Image (tube, rainbow over all chains, first blue to last red; front, side):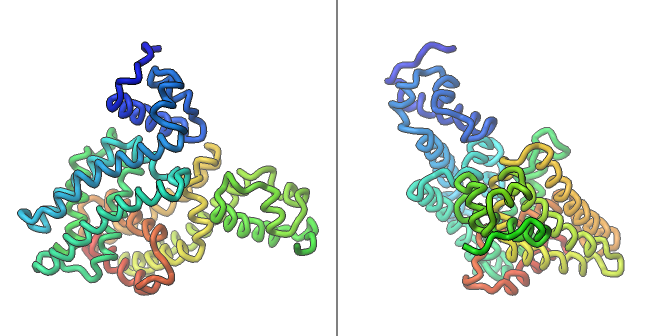
Length: 198
Length: 198
């Protein structure tokens, strides 16, 4: 086991805990992983672990929260960037959505089937971040319609359809599969254009 | 509580158990529901319950298996019906997919986040049924391309995109929402046509 890390390795240690924890939850499942397993995997004592997180649910919440915050910080400014056309913003965000979902797969799969393990306040925070992304996406579609760039019957339904289609990829995409990630991004960019009537 | 039902009420009682169980798993969660809770909800003794299912995991497996079998039995013959054009088959199946997902929502939501509770053999059976649907869908897209009815770059990727888009609806569709179920079906039929270049 690595040397025990001291308490003052604050922010980096916290990120390290979250990354190892997301891998363990992903591999073994949330309920099969104890807070002691997490401490062992990082190479810290249980007491250092408890200095950072009171319980396992807090670790899960921090993983989901950190991923969603990073996702929103990466995508929403692009969706709201008025120096780009709506079509350019959507193309850029389709790539970001697929790449972030792939790069941070353990964190993302964790956040999904076991989101029920979070308490209502923790769930509400995740929903708020999802809503920020959804709303920015919907607004750029509405802008594209107003500008005559997109032909869309129902902006809200089409937003859900595009986001569900993009979210599906993480469930089946295999980096070693027939298509490279870039090829998948190109396909989904074209499919999104079709849904938007671009 | 209803009168205790006798063992000879076999097939109907089994279906009743599965329907009540899917509602309880859906409302309270799988881990929070005991086999005794299920027996109580149906109004049978625990021993009658154990006559039908050895444990809770078997109940879950039977729910998932029954739903998936019904889904495949309803959709695959339509997708393989050569008396209809590929476009007609897809339109019919988009409606079936969305309606079955809505009608049997408790069974479907059950099968998803907690599919990890199933053992590998049980999971393999579900995957086999999913694959039968996926393959029939992919084949009708390939037929449509060959007939010049669809313009599709990659039939496999487009199959996943359409199915992920359709599967997403059950997560957010609210029967009391702004759009009726028929309106959602009409929207998704049109969106699917776009993805297929129909």
